[in-house]
Image 1 (cartoon, rainbow, N blue to C red):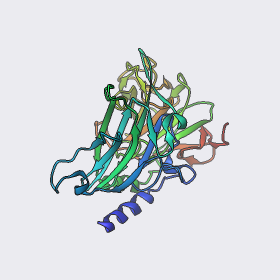
Image 2 (image 1 turned 135 degrees about the vertical axis):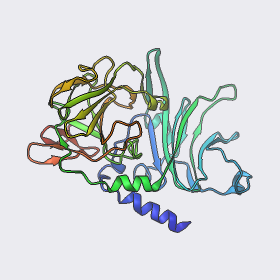
Image 3 (image 1 turned 90 degrees about the horizontal axis):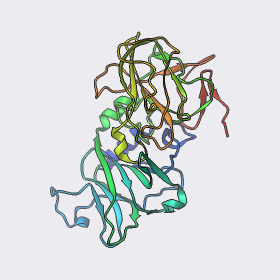
Length: 340
């Protein structure tokens, strides 16, 4: 058991693109708390109340009995997540009540909101990834006796072998493209293997570039438009938005599929089967889908199947090729000085 945990820790800590200056290759996002089994979200700022091995007796159960993935203690209202499997398990949880973490009330740390057509609502989203046979007590939920629980979740198991395989992929030098945004520079909020949302094979090799809504997005390579979707309006940190997004998928001339995600509603300048040339204005950036802040999410695939895994890629700068890392600023020339 302990050897397995050690192996798990070593594999994940040696993923090639985790930037050291930003924990886990992502920047902290408003209204969101992130915790992984092997490391806190930031040094000395672990917001989780407690991490511990799963013990059947603690829950009054015997081995093999059914165990809930989530639980809220009826007396202290502590929200816990549980993994009794032999795989990694991810939890995305949105809570529509005030919460208190190990750092104190969430409102004192940062606020988040979900943008909806009928107004705005304050809430917090928790992202937790647990190792096998473990428990995390995430926070205390401040809910009154006469209040209905407002909580939504998405839970997935992740095979270690899939993450390990993704982390070992090496960028083919031919998979080098033009930068999708003009002027700038733009901050990268999450890079390859980012532990906010880029820790699944389907999103592992993706780049998030923060940019104002309406920023023109340009084709990184020439090709043919495969699909266009720009009719969604919802955005924000609610996990329901994980399944809603606007995007353009283009099959480039080298056979690679480029996917541009979170684009603004009704902003597409192209339609299916259109031919585009590198540098063409194809859409505008937005904040549609799971977007704590407005940004462009860009990823590459070798096929257009729904479960296609992502592949490494890079951009051609003025002098060198580059792959954006979280917390750093970029434009078409490459990395730039930090912008205040």
